[in-house]
Image (cartoon, rainbow, N blue to C red):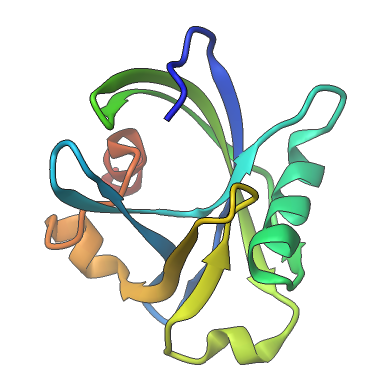
Length: 145
């Protein structure tokens, strides 16, 4: 992971269905800890955050989403892979256009760097109880309100 020296802006898809949340499972190799986050990525210079979430979903899963509401915007200060990070995260409520993405199975998410991760549906209740570590933690604090 490249050391971060600036605040990054991320745009992420918040996709819920019947008490389930669509997330990607990732691992912090330093902490030896799995964590789960919404799919999406970094806003590029000159790109709107709303366009980023659609682009990222298409790049990562080869599918499309429909934005269903206004974004929740949160600040996230964290440590990952031993390095500090700072982000402004836009969480857009979305729905998959392709109904096959509502199947409860593992989907392969492909990153631009060639890495692959498992994307899946998890119980939102497990995230709220802490059984599954959903990041950023500020999202959980907001959701529990």
